[in-house]
Length: 459
Ligand code: SF4
Image (cartoon, rainbow, N blue to C red):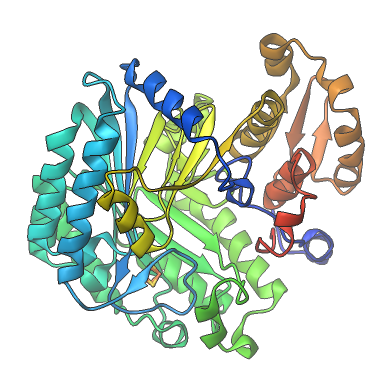
């Protein structure tokens, strides 16, 4: 059991450094523009020969208004025509991407993220569905999820989503308290969220997640508890409860937040500990770092079966699939390479106008990266490292190969955050709050120049 005693607070203060969230390893700051285009062509040719199922991510960057805490890649606009224009380019990018895919390789997972996917009106959403079907084969058992902003969603949006095959929705909530909502510039009455959840179920989109954030201005433990109990009345399958990442030098909109109104480290910690201790009473399991899922949900099953994975969308049951990402800033990935699209909309359009995939950066993993990625993903997903997995697969003696890392971890061991049992390293309940700190010890790039000031605090 984790509890907010003064010792825990001291540990948080001690280990609260800046660090990656490890949705990928190496992280996006390592991606570089000086990639070899011929090598990418060889990757595409390799992909073209495979019939393995794939995952497709589509980034819709537009939002109607700016939430001041936001760290996503987005464009604020009220011009709905920009959606049509963007779809013209998604059509081109889909065609060019499909040319690199075997016609029998089905999409097993599709995710629309943003920005705000429901910025697109119902007609535009249906057009996006047709684009996918025009160029790709969709698996009959596809997991098709979409991020929904309840403030920009109507029953017609939901009908359109259902029509194109969506079966899971993530609703952005953050906090249900009106004063907090005013402080973050996101007014969203709880009734509006509840109505969207009701309409989703009415139309057969039954898998529903909610995204909350703790550490926002004017949040208190009491308000956070109320937010959790409010969303629980809507019977979610999963909750993502993210720590607010304050990086105003990288996210200028965050300068609009009143820093005097942020909760203290102690209050913030109290919110996380409350979630960890309370949610099991509602039948939820704590997954990895910031997710909670019903015990009968696929994510909980994946945790139990040791198949839980982490990728750019957080935790996933399908992260082993090669991911194709479409849209401005999307990141495609397979076991060998990460490929990131242009983050500037004009440049994204320019490359597609030339009938070129809009690649901006790439990163090719070497054997050392692959080994460390596997270790870091075990930490982030299972909260343990089984040394025998590496000995079997890579023929290495883990204790010898990572002697200096294991030495470095003795400090966390002395603080009760992990146990080294000789054949495996187990992160304790208390240590779960410090997963990123443990992972950072195995990060072979963490001291590089690109990492300075690139990350939020780890706790
Ligand atoms: S939080 Fe979501 S809706 Fe708000 S600005 Fe960011 S991407 Fe847009």
